[in-house]
Image 1 (cartoon, rainbow, N blue to C red):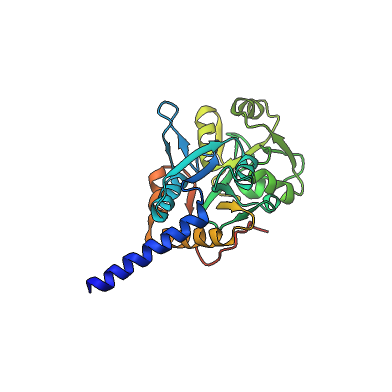
Image 2: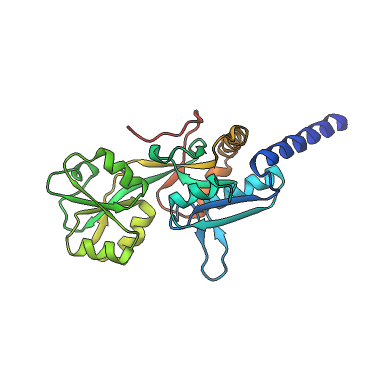
Length: 264
């Protein structure tokens, strides 16, 4: 029995070393995430400590392949992609969106971030079905997942792209320059608390698929990460990491496919 256990341990160590060579060939797992997206992770301004579901996943991946982990925020989704595609990081946490494909490989979806809209308290918009109507102006942050989605889907309402400036977004709502602002539910909750007279639409538009990216052509690394996500989901680690984050409107993505997708 001890011999069999020793073999199992040896095989696990070999598998971990092989995965480390594929995922983090430099000996340290360098991870980046979108600094403005609390659904992924949050950095303490005083201590610099980073916590959140994506940070927990990065650290657990590093633990399993036996390497130290460095994780840092970057400014926007394109910066996540560029940092990974140019080899400055080994993995990145970013939402899958078809227009972002090209220079990186996307893992399966590990988490869904629900999107909705913030409106004024007396707005006639009561549900998602009320948003896309003629004469209404809907805003979203430039290049945000929901904004890219709305570009494809809005038929009657007008889409306005804004900068990631909470003060300006609150001003536009209060001045009725826009009828609704779309974002993830955590971000909307923060804005609502800071903006009296507003409310969040109770239903969700869709869940943005969160993925882990690696540089283009790294098929073995991608496969190893997909297997890791499968195991993190099955073991309950992913569920527990999401619950521990305390973030509103995020949930584990169901398994079954290694191909990420957004709703048609």
